[in-house]
Image (cartoon, rainbow, N blue to C red; front, side, top):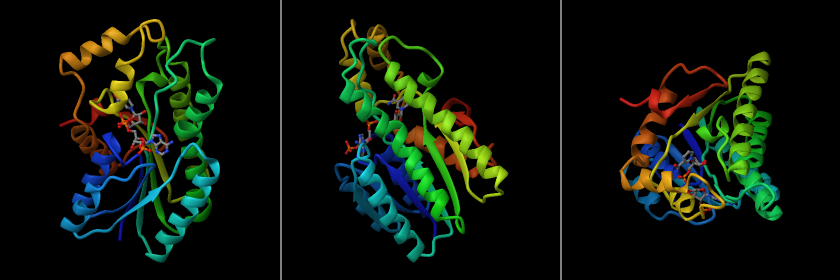
Length: 249
Ligand SMILES: NC(=O)c1ccc[n+]([C@@H]2O[C@H](COP(=O)([O-])OP(=O)(O)OC[C@H]3O[C@@H](n4cnc5c(N)ncnc54)[C@H](OP(=O)(O)O)[C@@H]3O)[C@@H](O)[C@H]2O)c1
């Protein structure tokens, strides 16, 4: 049996990835703080299993405890292929440096960067007998300075560096695990609503992002999830960053 462990399944891209994984016959273990009630019915329809774990990814202890339980469960199920999708993310705090609330910076780094690092560490340590493919959801903000996004750009740049370094180590150690980063482009989700609600003083590009919405330039998450699943079917380069535009039909 194949399993996908996906963070941030309550809405947005994570929900679309979870649905499409189940539609193609993969059982899903979903994590978020709030539960998505639709996913169980998708599982029933496609005769796969869906398990939800409530987890606040900003808590190191919760990440360690919940993922240890998930790894035990996957081992009991004798999984063949396991996909780990580190999708959950936050964009706040959107503020210029000097005005950053310390607690929000720490919380952000935990969700966007530290949790994916700890999760990958646990799977690498405990699942060497399985084929594990990890996908870290990144952003173009990792490569471009954006006024007001110092925290977000830093966490996503960290995700890219962690991905390439982990791949280097896995290859050197002849591991069967693979890891890749996927940049989804701009999507019509709650995160974009958060971005549009920032003040111009905090976020210099806010009007551009309002125009993206008005002009219909934000992609549907189902289209983006399809591109990500296509990536997994390819012989992708370990440790690289792939952009949605290069995977769309
Ligand atoms: N939207 C875009 O335009 C865009 C562009 C580039 C990259 N991305 C990236 O794509 C990914 C998905 O973004 P999205 O737009 O789908 O975001 P979204 O609609 O805001 O959904 C975020 C998901 O992350 C979960 N999450 C947030 N904080 C969490 C926490 N402390 N613990 C556990 N789960 C948490 C949320 O679940 P709960 O609130 O229920 O916990 C939710 O399921 C993110 O990594 C984002 O950085 C998005």
